[in-house]
Image (cartoon, rainbow, N blue to C red):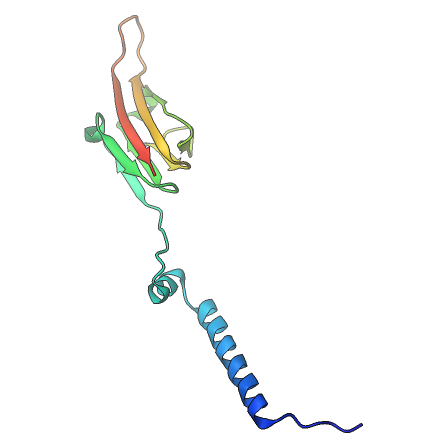
Length: 134
């Protein structure tokens, strides 16, 4: 059985293709998303942490799907919270010392309303903020 020789130009083309493809694959594997997005011009979305304070109640706050939203409130254990789901999902049903944490899971608008837990017949104080998720 006799081996046939492969023409030199064909070997050169095959070698070039392997080197080019191998270089692109190793480059893609070796770079992080930020560098890759800068090189390609593609913007990689980043999720934000949005902190809503007492001063922002009575206004509207914008967020994007995937963002984490913290409602910062003193003594949150003394307040009841109501919100629309979706677009928001409560991360932990028990508020931390600083308040409640949500994840924006869908586009839409919702009011987050805090009502003071009271005893008696008097209407309790309420505070609301509108969250617009896009």
